[in-house]
Image (tube, rainbow, N blue to C red):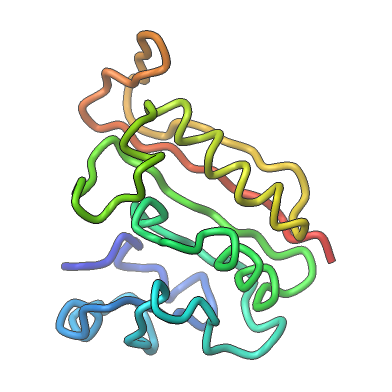
Length: 158
């Protein structure tokens, strides 16, 4: 099981497309209808038509993108009017892959960084963030929840 979506996601959603760099993992994702193998760091243009999706998600990988502002602009382009972008953040990462600012900041600051991507793209309404992990506990901007997971989301402004 390599999806972050529930196994019954097809029963209440429309088209589901996964985009990533590992074709083996993408092939195994039974919660999507199709997949695209692409390195967004090499080319941040999403291979989808304008106004294609109601929701775009990014699960625990925004910290690996070298052009996150461009990606947010692209997400806005492919979202339908009123669509939502939802980015999931955890307190785990591969330090060799994450951009330097991410490594120099704490969990709370990560939420602000992602919110700033939405804000400075100029394409989204005010972002909203919430921790959805069980029993949230914070000390000085750092989650001490072993299962920390926050969602930063914003509605496209078009």
